[in-house]
Image (tube, rainbow, N blue to C red; front, side, top):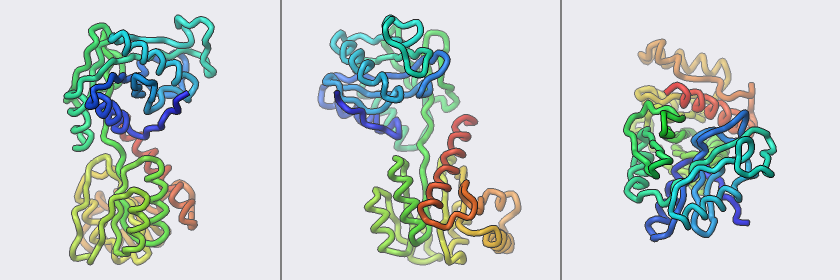
Length: 319
């Protein structure tokens, strides 16, 4: 059995497909299109499969990946798209899902290389987009519409792609290193900013992009969009004010800073005296994290990561 590689982002799945297609090898994109009663993955979940059965991504909790990959290999050999079902209303009468119910998977054979390039370009530019899968015609259409909702529209299955969650971590010390380690291990994009070269070296070892802060008068560009979370992890809080103001100038969905309730009150008061209005101040979260008074760097990182991911999931549902 070929082990499935877990992919945190659709980008990894599309990169795997593009690599296969550029090498002239067959490939298949598997998509969850229907779930009856309950299922371990939401509709729209993807898995990429090669002709040898190698795969990236999950469409269930692991109970169907090998079987569905086998269906995808057969589809590639037949050079024809198809929909396969497991569980209730399935052609496999002797197969029952552990969670009950049923699931349907659309298998699209040999995705167009130009389409994959276009999707990956949009992902690199952090632009939302959609794909329309047409099972009967074996076609997939790129949709510029950022308001696409995942689901069936007549005979087409639409899938929406939002930019991935991005963490911008600014600060120093063990909190910055641990937050970088955890977020990177979970597969998220991480940019780490610090004046401490030794901490930046550790962050870089955890696959983060790193940027050195030389002075508060020279702030490097801070990427900022509505899918970005800023987390300020300073103990010398006077250093954070110009950086927080820079973060507030963009549409980031989450801006939070380390410290107690008293520290947060002082922070807001100082920014208020610096001319920041109340509506803008309300965007700054603190104390950060779901676990009150977390002081251990590892517990703090887990607490903050959970809070940010939950906010991001809520954002995906709204936009």
